[in-house]
Structures are given as structure tokens and as C-alpha cells.
Length: 356
Image (cartoon, rainbow, N blue to C red; front, top):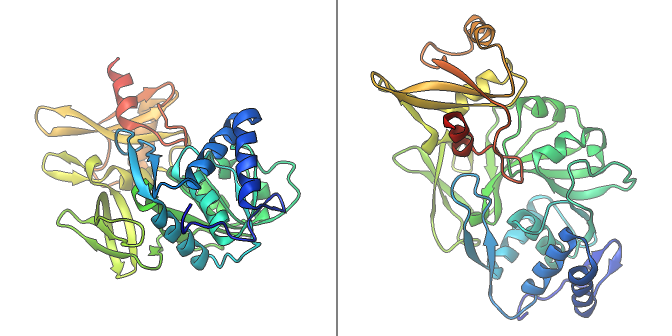
């Protein structure tokens, strides 16, 4: 594998593995393992081959899923940056509970091999800490897993959460968990997170994201985040994420530029409206729009499951959380939303169910 050598302290379930041990384990995972273990074995064999790059599938949450090619050197740099930020030392324990089919799972394996972590692998189910008695120094989960693991989250000292939006209800619960949980900002192109923000200890949810070392951020003329991270990407990444820059190292995420709705000349940010509505609605929902001959676009609230439309609209108006332009003109329901494997709602696909 050239310069990508295996850290001498790298271990799985407490057993230190040589390169030959790792190859043998990977083949046994592929031949006899469960589906998630097969994916781990395949990735490890790809990682230790002579190719300087690896192909990674994007999740498709903000566009069509695609395969991108990433330099292994950049994945090592990403692992080192995370190790530095979270003070992960050789023999620190880490939990892999995400599938190795996407970048987040792959990177947990890379961190372990590069930093010399003791990696514990469990099936990437939704309720995964039940019955596990040991503690871990580091872990990564999607919000659905976090939601189902609240009583056991104290077992993970530093937990990074990503892959889907974190609901207001979950944020509230995390404030009382005695560990350090962080919301992450990143994408496949940035090799997972380039920024994090803490979620525990009654922190103000309006605090910004802080960027990791060796990352520079600016905004373009749309107020969208532009990322220059030369250690993990050859290109400057122009995102569609509307942000507010607080300082050269901090930003607040406001929403997606491609979701912005223009209703009668008023630009409305769905994510900001959703944030305001999250205290009123318990079931899943999102804000979208439908064509309107007069306004161009008309604001639409889409709710999962059944709801009393008149009663809900009355509640929304009476709470005064929305400005008059932010109040939905229509409320529609969909029995079950279309989601990605990590639990993100696919808005466009769900909207097509309304037209069906």
C-alpha cells in the first residue's frame, strides 16, 4: 500500500492486527460474514491495494447519487485532522456502527488504521448500544441511531452525528446526556466533516459550527459556503448551503440555496421555517412550494401521516412563530415520506407522491 502503512497499535476488538492478519480477516468477512462485514472486508482490501485512489458513493440526499474518486492520501489527512481535534491517541477505543458502503463508515476504518485505534465493530442497526457494557472514546452515528440510544450514549465519550438533520426534540434530549456529542457539517467531497458544533451541556443551539484545522471558508454572491480544504480536496468546493459567516473559522448554517422559495418576490428559506415549526409539529414534515399563477410559488407544508389541517393552520397562526409571509398557504399529507438509507427525507421524491 505504499506510504499508507498500518499503525502498529491498530486493533479490532482488543486484538492487535498485522497487515497479514487484516488481509486474512477481510477475506473471512467477505466469505463468511454478514452483509455489513462483507462491505468492511471489501473496503479494507481496496484500501491496502496499490491504487492511490478509492471510489466512494455519495448518499444522494442533495442530488443524484454518484461515484466520486478520492485520493487515499486525503483520507489519511482527514483521519489525522479528526484525531487532532478529538485528541484520539493510539489505543483509544472507537466504535464502528455505520455501514462501510458510504464515506462515514469507510473513514472510521481509516481513522482506526491510521491512528492505531482499538476498533469495535457492531452491526449498523438502529438500536445498537443495548446490551453493550463497555465504553468507547469515539464514535459516529446518524440521528436515528442516536435517537434510539439516548439511555446508553454516555458510553461514547466523543460522538459525532451526521448524515441527516438533527430534530429539535433530539437536540433537546442531547443536552442532558453526559458525553460530548457534536453535530457535523460535511459531505463525501470533503471526506466527511470539515466543521463541528457541540450539542450537550445546555449549549445555546444558535452557536455556530467551528471548522477543523487546515480549512478556509468564505461565501459566494449567493451567501453560500465556499470551502477551501487543500489537505482533503484538490478543488475549492462551492456548496449550495446558505450560511452566515460569524468569523474566519465559524459559520451558521441557514438552509439550502436550491430549496429557497420565491413567493411574490419574497425569498423564503424552508429550513428556517421548518426550524420555527418544529415546536408545533411532532410528526415529520417539510416546507416546499407549488406553482401559483399570481405569486409564482405558493408555500406548502407537507406532513407525514394524518393531520387535522384546519386545526394545525389555526395553531400555526396563533403561536405567531412565523411572519405572515412564512405561513403556509396549503397543508398536504403523505402517508410515508421517501427517505435515504441514513434517514434523510427525499423532498423531490416525496413531492411526486402528492401528484400521484
